[in-house]
Amino acid sequence: MTMPTMTCLTLAATQGAFKTVTVSERTAQALADGSWIPALAYIAAALAGLGALLTLVGLLLIYAERKIAAHFQCRVGPMRVGWHGILQTVADAIKLLLKEDVIPERADKAMHLLAPFLSMLATVMVLGVLPYSPILQITDINIGVLYVTAVSGFGVMGILLGGWSSNNKWSMVGAMRAGAQIISYEISATLALLVVVLFSGSLSLAEIVQSQDAGWWIWRAHGVGLVAFIIFVIAVTAEINRTPFDIPEGESELAAGFHTEYSGLRFSFFFLAEFINMFVVSAMAATLFLGGWMPFHIGTGGAFNGAMDLIPPVLWFFGKTSLVVFVIMWFRWTFPRLRVDQLMYLEWKVLLPIGFANLFAAALVVLYNLYPFAITAP
Image (cartoon, one colour):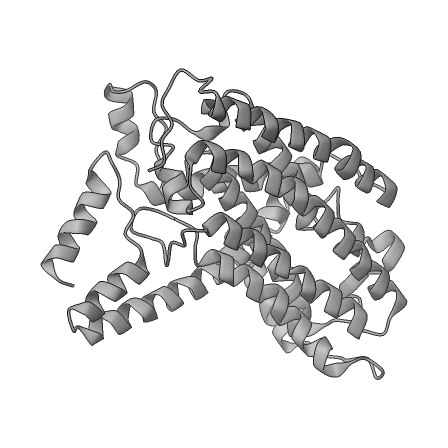
């Protein structure tokens, strides 16, 4: 690593006005300097980090889901495999790897094999653009919000293919439910995202985080930010098929829904994609509304703000993301599953009108300068 690069990273981590330095920028700088080995090292580190993140997040969230569910129900959860059952998820992963992989005789085998990988692919593509800290982001795209919205919607193709290719009526019904549900709620989620885009003046995720240096958009956007956050959390909970919106895999009606005919490793891909998607949408909520890796500040100075600055940005990011993940898990053990008609009513008759009205109000605030602080694009 060259001295200018080291200086840039140090400034990014210590100055009040953060400057995001992505892995792709460091790689491009190394190539421009003629340093092939550091460039290859950056690429290898990014791929290894992405793989480690997928594995650790999947294992930890599954374990956390079990323990949180247990405590909500006055149980203790996994306790036997490892300390407090910490290795139970690892044991389950090994079991799934060793299970027989069965494909229905009349299934479309090519599509049946492809579907789980499509579900995982969309998730991995989003993880690459999330800003985890000023120096931990693989790449920053100037249309990052649009990219995340488009790629996230691509994940439904895996569910549709999985249900259709299985040649099973329950799988097909579950896939059709998932398609209708995800496409419907994606509209409300996008309307909520546009509120933040209006106030920040940018589609770049890194610039949206930097625009919250003077305050997080959940409270700094004069009410419309809070409404947009609530709409976004409800909509993305439906998009990732979490209770109370888990009708695509409603076991009381459809056996296991779209993945009824999946077993072994390919079933684990669908299962893992659900938890990784929960992390992704929680990370997006933290990035857009809760300041991302920005610390929590009160006012413009003082000992409290100085103490908050001592906490590494990456811990702020994962802490905020974990809070949103906990709220989504809380939903599962609080609300009963909705019927199909109730689910569609909530989107088209409740969330969508509120989302449009909230976006219109946000546009008026920005257009007519109806706020006591300056908002400029970074």
